[in-house]
Image (cartoon, rainbow, N blue to C red; front, side, top):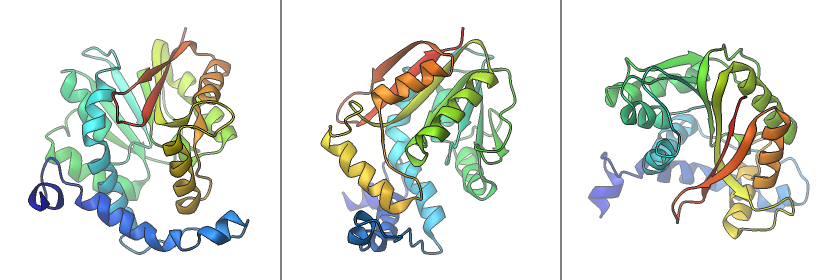
Length: 247
C-alpha cells in the first residue's frame, strides 16, 4: 500500500499529502480566522510545487469522469482556466483524438504543468498560456471553457466576471463547464463536506470558500448561458458540474 500511494506512479498521493502537511500551520490559525482576525496563509517555499502536483494527484481519477460528461469532437478547442497541472486538459485530449486544449495559468505554475503534460505525451495538443485569468484576455473561438476547481477561490463578483469572459470567448453553441465542490442551496449548510471544504479554503487562500449550486446556475444564466444544468460525478466524488450553452 505504501509503494502504491507514496511512490511515483499512477495512483500516487505523495504530493497531495505533502500539500496537506504544508497547510498544517495555517490550521493553527483557525481561532484567529474564525474570530475575524487577519491570520492569513503561511506558505513554506515548497508550497506551490507541492500544491500543483498535489492537485494532479487529487484530480487524476476525477478528470476522466469529467471528460466523459463533456461532449466534444475532433478539431474543437477547449480553454482550461486556472488549469494548474493540466490534468483535465490531458484527460480531454486523450479521450477525443484531434481535440486541442489550452491551459491558462500563472507562469510559475505552467513551469510545472509543462513537465506533467510532456510526461503524458500531450505537449502537441495541450498548449500553455501564461497569464492571470482575472486580467488576461481569453481570446476567442473556443468550443468549451472549463473552470475546474478554481471558482471556490474567488468571490461571487469575480465568479460572475469569469463567466461573462468565458461567454465572450466561446463560439455560438459552445459549452461552459464549472466543476467544483458546492453547497446544495443558498443556505450553505449542506452537505457536510462542503462546510469542511469551505473552512479549509478560508484558511488557505485570501478569498476562498465554497459557492452553492443554486448560485452558480443563476450566475451562469445571468451571463447569457442557456439550458444550465447540473451533472453529478459518481460517488464518493464530492464534485458537481454546472454546464451551460452559449446560444
